[in-house]
Image 1: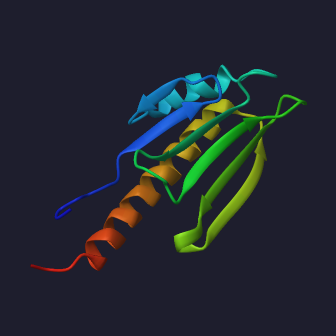
Image 2 (image 1 turned 45 degrees about the vertical axis):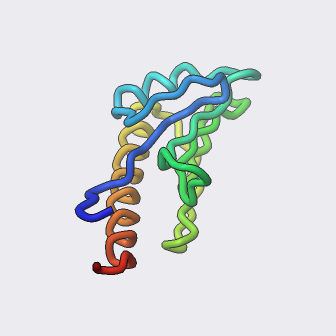
Image 3 (image 1 turned 180 degrees about the horizontal axis):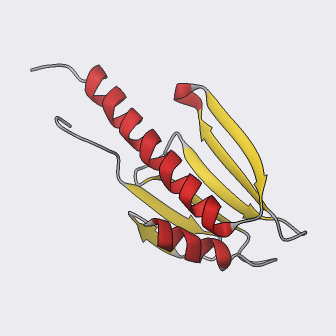
Amino acid sequence: MVGREYIRLKAENEGGELIVEPSEDALYEMIIELTLPGNTFVIVEPDEDDPSWFASVVRLDDGTYEVEYRDPLRRYHRLDIATDPSRIASDVTIWTAQASRAHAALSRDSSPDF
């Protein structure tokens, strides 16, 4: 797609809640609503079939959160343990926005010029 600035994102939790183009505040709400055992994770990824990269937040038994960032195309993988839902929402928002722009640029660069 010519001129594409970013890739549209979605956030979905284990409980089935889906938010398209989630804001940092919406992610924060999804994170603080994570509970054991039935709604333990939220994933943010491109709103497309078979997305290749993602960020996820998992509520652990001890009340902390496991935050994972995975982008195989750019050879990036990071796994953190965190406690502050506000900071997690901010970090995930920033990382997914950067990844979205990078993948849009890669897509533009690899598109044939007609």
